[in-house]
Image 1 (cartoon, rainbow, N blue to C red):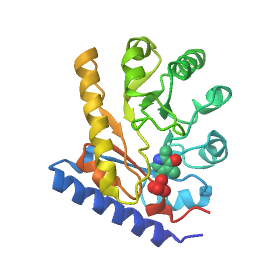
Image 2: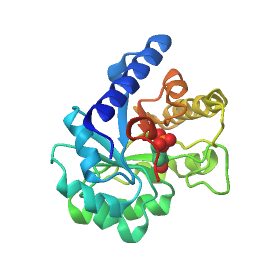
Image 3: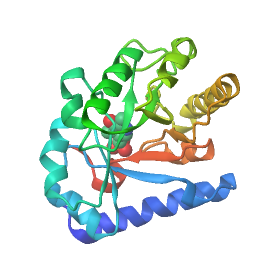
Image 4: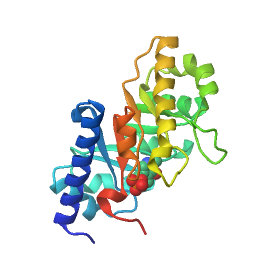
Length: 230
Ligand SMILES: *Cc1c(COP(=O)(O)O)cnc(C)c1O
C-alpha cells in the first residue's frame, strides 16, 4: 500500500501539470476538475487522497462503489465512469451523483425512469464513440444527432456534456484530433439544438494535458495518482 506522502505528492504533481496545461491554453485551472480514478484501489488508499484534501473520485464498477462509498466520508463526490447496465441502475444512482457513461437512448431512458422512481436528478454525460470503434460503448455522432431531441426530453437527466475514451495511442499527441472532434461536436449540438453543454470529460493519465489544451473540463486520472493497477 502506498503511504500518505506518496499519494499527496502525486496529487500535487498532477495538479501542477493541470495548471501548466491551463497556462499554455490560456485557461483557468478552476475550470478543470481532477477526477481521481480509484478503481481497484481499496478504501484505505482512497482515504489517503481524502486526507490530502481531494474530494472527487471515479469508479468504473458499481460493485466497487457499493463497497467503498459507504465506508468513506459522506462529503465526497463520486462519479461512475464505467458502463451502467440496466440491472445495476437502482443500486448505482444513490451512490454516484454523476454518470459519465450514458451510451444509448435505451440506457438513458432506463436511467431516467429509475431516477424518477427514486426521486433523483442524476448529472450525466453522453458517451461518444468518437472513432466508431466496434469494441467501444457510446453514441456515434450520427445517432447522437438523431436522438438528441429524445434525450433532451428525459427530464430527470441533467445532461452536463460529452465524454470520450479515445482509441489508445502510445503518443498522447495522437489523441488530440479526437479531443478536438469532441469539442467541435459539442459546439454543433449546441448550435443545432439550442442547448448548453458545459462539460467535456476527456483525458486520462497519459494524455490529460493534451485534453486540457483542447478544452477538457473533467480529466479522469488513475495511475498518475494511485500508481499502476494489478
Ligand atoms: C481507468 C479509467 C481511467 C483512468 O485511467 P488511467 O490511465 O489510470 O489514468 C479513466 N477513464 C476511464 C473510463 C477508465 O476506465
